[in-house]
Amino acid sequence: MGKLRNLFVKNDKTHRFRDKISVKISFLYLILILLIELWLFVGFYLFIFNSVINNQVNSLVNRGENFSSVLSMEFDTNMVKHAIMLEKNSSQEIVIQNENHDIVGSSNAVTAQMQTHIKSLENVNTSQKVLHYQLFKDDYIVSMNRIEEDGKIWGTVYLFLETKPIRQTLLQIGLIFLLLLFLTFILTAILTYYLSRKITKPLLELKDTTEKIANGALDLTTDIHSQDEIGDLAHAIENMASRLNQLQKQRNEFLSAVAHELRTPLTLIKGYADFASRKNVSESQRSEYLSIIKEEIERLTKLVENLMTLARLEENEFTISKKETNLAELIQQVATDITLLLKDKQMLLNIQGNANFSAQIDPVRIQQVLTNLLMNAYKYSPEKSTITLSVRANKADFSIVIRDEGPGISEENLPHIFDRFYRVDSSRTRKTGGFGLGLSIVKDIISLHGGQISAESIENQGTKIKIILPYH
Image 1 (spheres, rainbow, N blue to C red):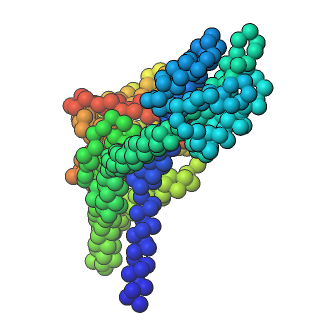
Image 2 (cartoon, rainbow, N blue to C red):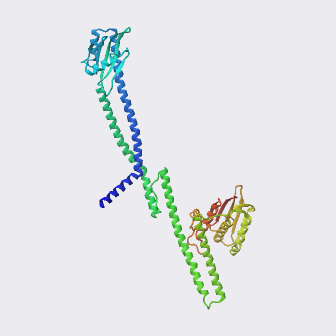
Image 3 (cartoon, helix red, strand yellow):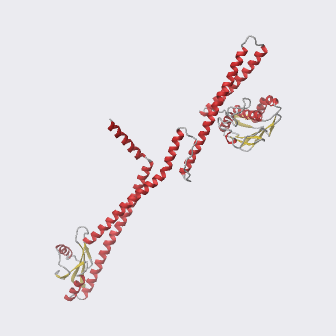
């Protein structure tokens, strides 16, 4: 069993090695380069091969033509001996026949294969040069030229060039090419492996980074700073990890806040319920206790509603029902709903612009948005301050701007105020603190309408929230 297990482990490692990107890239690149090199080497070798053969053959033919031309002017014994003397110490053999096909001279003894070539060529009825050879079968390359004058053939000149030296030369060139091909293959393999490792190293680092992220290590960065696609991917992963880290912190803060907000009203409800149930409590005290219990229940109800809304948004089950709505009437309704609250702090709501036009919106959700924003402005604005709500109708859309005179939001917190679970100040009191859900829900409602929402703020001067919505 142990050997079988080791065999399975070995096979698994082999498959994992084959499946590595670096191995795949190296193999494909190596095959491609090898095919290109092989094609180039074969083409170059064939070029040299043909050049060597053509040079030898052309040299043989030219000498044969020269001998034929000289002997045509004076074909006698002395001239034949002179021609033979010229070829005595050369790499070629010369055989001269007369018009009766008798050999009248040769530079060396005529071999059997030379006789075979002569027999195959002497009856060829032509006065032109003739070549006869099979490089890898015959021992000679043969050139035949007729000796003629004024149309009369006086004889024939045969030049023989041994093929063995040529084959040896071509073989040596071939071996050199094979050696170069082998060395090139080795160098290419090394270079390919190096390049593939260089390419895949950052990918492996990104893999390790994503595994650390999956295991919960979100506060990390990579050492990849290249300006290519891999660098962009590394930057995106770092942003994702930072975003997840921030989201995790926000969730933890949110859960802590929810636990606190649930525990506090439940404790109050339980305590005041106990007080209200005592027999010695006066009616006025019991009424006061029940009023406090009602307020805490309303607070719990609002928290649960926000959580349910958030859950529907997360599951994409949150829908809007658009219908033709007069914006002036909608804003007037919202203003009426918060008038009593504003009087408690002697605050004013200043409505500016002409809102007497209609748009295809969900009146309930847009009323929820405006109420939420005005309530935020009310909570964080000082007494006797003014909240301004201005409306502007454009050609393709309209805008609603809500401006307060509160303490403002810092530059550090401003980009995150629409994030879910985010609270600008986690230590807010129960009177002013929220759950970090209101503005996130507002943003989602505006997005579902195809609109945009943005915020500007200056510390100690106030905050401006701008909504842009299409008419349809």
